[in-house]
Amino acid sequence: MRLPSLFIPHGGGPCFFMNEGGPPDPMWQPMAAYLKTIVADLPERPRAILVISGHWEESVFTVHDGTKPALLFDYYGFPPHTYQLRWDAPGAPDVAARAADLLKGAGFPAGRDGARGWDHGVFIPLMVALPDADIPVVQLSLRQDLDPAAHIAAGRALAPLRDEGVLIVGSGMSFHNMRVRGPQATAPSERFDAALTAAVTDPDPAARDARLADWRAMPEAAFSHPREEHLIPLMVAAGAGADDPGSHAHRSTVIGWTVSGYRFG
Image (cartoon, rainbow, N blue to C red; front, top):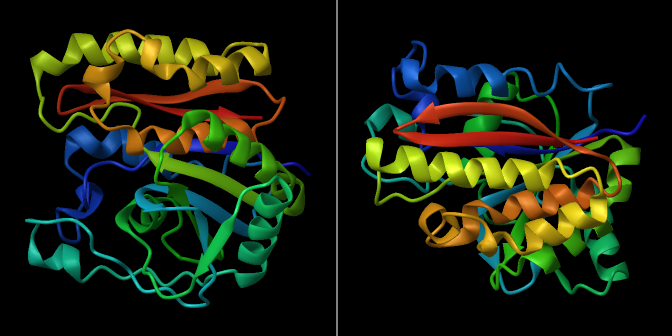
């Protein structure tokens, strides 16, 4: 059975685990509630998850092919307990090799890395979605040029994985401007969110991909993403969606930002 591809918000730092042993701050609870549903809402349980995080960039697309990746605590200034989190999901070297081969077959050079830990764009949302850490995970880097069309094309190359029991997940934030919070962010983030959602849900997949590749033309684009590394995982998820429709899966408001999640297929 074909699995969908997803673009999920991964929050801010260890946001869902700030209250040691307790629930997330009420602001983050709607996002956490959504993340808890993403596996249960699938047509079948994945045999593996391929995650593209906004926190890993390489000169070429690079897959993590380790068997037991450590966690990379790449956030700063948070309570000590958030640097002692554990999430021990296994890697999936076979899926990493298959992803690299698919990328190479589409003309993309592909690297492999077994040493880097999973960054918080991987383990923080998946700790919410999969607290038992019982599905193998592979991480794929972004390409440093952050070219949206190239990342859409890379996603299309990876689309066959969806028929092989692999869930493809882009992990980022649909709005990511750390310089603005509160009311000054609300109206611009809503305008960008509306335009982004309209592009994702365009019924013509070719038009959808073209609109996403031209995301900088959307209202408030530069304000919403001074640098686009948190948006580009959406491009991979959309490309992996191939000709399946895109739908709006989640919307919440955090620190004044309107933030969305999307599903393809």
